Image (cartoon, rainbow, N blue to C red; front, side):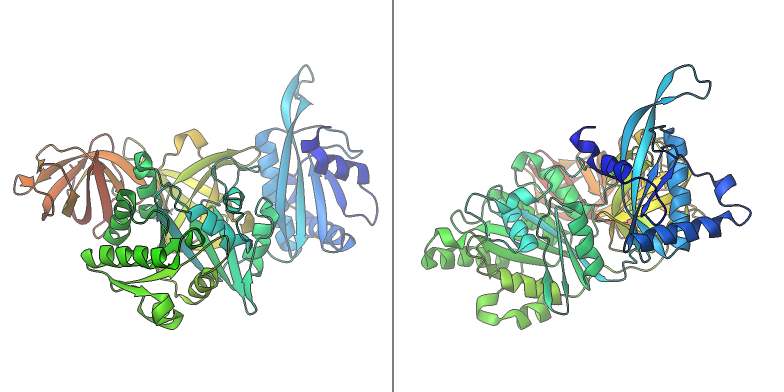
Length: 543
């Protein structure tokens, strides 16, 4: 077997034996293994395997009793995982990890070989994580090369950077390329705090270490990293608007100072009313006088946006915690190389209150989709309100025709840790039964199964034009970023036109398809160098 099958090879070599922690199963079936008292006996067997392995067992699925690689279909493997999850729950344990491999299997008529699945499920003692911990989500922004990813990497690991961005390499720059596929890790960094201080991820490349931090921490801090390149401003807007963020972290490099991109990102952060911290980075590269000069430039920029700067070095962390928000923006001087100022950020992230807790029915706008072998379609995003549990019946949509489809929650993951439930403010991946991955699109929403959603093509809005070379006339067609929706739309200003700096009313009509939109939602619109913000004030029925 190749290196990528090391875990499977090791489990097969240990073998299934009395008093061991390995169990071979070709498949589980709901009809067979959950009926006539078999659930209790199989749960007792699982419990025995876990105890024999000092709290850990491995179930090898898709193999014969003697360890032969039989392979099962994706549908059978998915059902087997559902049953195994119920057995683990009954035994007071949980599935901590699943790895799968493709093998040749014999078809039902025995004539030819088909692609089948073999998997190793690692089961740990204790119930799955119930994320009732205090969990804040921080969106990073800033010009390219202003050190935001390096700063986050140093916070997450506790390591000093080498001056060439070594800690930046710990972040998943392509979060969709995840070894297991079922990922809730939209953020590119996570760390936490317990009663003794920060809990770092010593090797962020190991997904189990991230899961361990989430499980052990009293408070979890997730970072949603955005793109600093100006051509990709739309990606940055989606990261800042589409997630349920608690705080923004804007980086300004001491050797460069505020740039056009800095002002763009600052405008988006403030337009969405996100409480924001400014970190002046790379202070080790310049003199103290230069750091003070850049700090003054940042303060002047904040005042021009009617914000009150609060340099933490002069006013202290207590003042920053008490006054952040309501127009007050703390400024922290930092260096990922010397780690100056990182202790201040640690204290802020440990003490700042969560800002986005929301009650009400469950709602999650889809930001990314995945297809996981043996599991199926996975929709990931940030839970906007309410709670969701494994086994819940949900509605997914709207589809291009405006309709919704019934789906079932197969499983939920948060930072590579399987959970029974997730609540508002959590970044999660939800495996869905009843839909194929290619049918799910960004901008769709998951709702309770008894909801009665009414998607729309057109709505009324109050908008403010932040930047435009001339004026906005009727028929103007920017891209509107609302929640995770990013769609071209047509504007029809109430007064016929809008000038730079103007605030006014307009109708907004999506160009291609309907979405779920509600009064009070905020959005950002852009087209070329034109940018603005708005708030939904009314829905146009049957438009």
